[in-house]
Image 1 (spheres, helix red, strand yellow):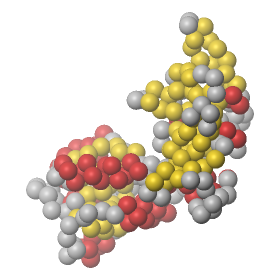
Image 2: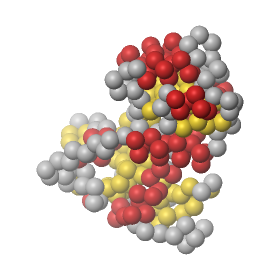
Image 3: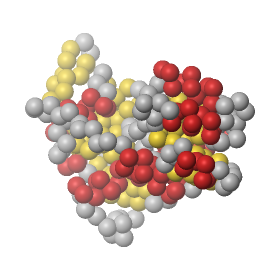
Image 4: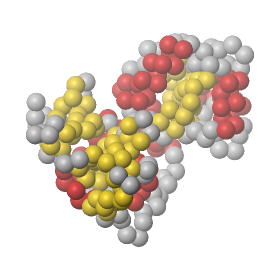
Length: 246
């Protein structure tokens, strides 16, 4: 999900960005005013906008009215310190109305409401999933079977392949890999990671109600599990939150 944050106060934008990133959301951009948001939207497609109301120039409510008149407006969530605009917010079809300071559980609930409103887009799957990947190694191409890969990790825009023996760089994006790997074998556990399900040795608590996936304890290989992905993983690997290891 691509999200635009609109707030005239930088600390508020930074705090909301941090919270959204905990929910496995892609931040498409930030804007400090309604005018700046409209400029961003001319070149950037977003699924949702989290916006303040009291801003100079085009305020949040006026921006919502302008977007409500467009053909396919993004979902709107107001984030404000004041309760008095709540009824007006729903007049412009806002999905939710969050009071500052934003609590993570309320933010997650708003994101679930946004996802519920979005039409389900079928993920295009290849006729034959990838079984091996070639990587550049000292000027030649080394073929790596996907069953040898424990996870893929995105580091500063570069995707790294992690096996139990070595790490390789690849030009493939996580999006391409997610669409072309067998979904029965690989799982997008975080916006920066895809893990091979059979490589997961255990699921461990990681503080604040989050978990990490241990793929090789001896080699100290582990990946984070995003809150938004935990429920889906439970359908693939059922576990009880009271029975994970400490």
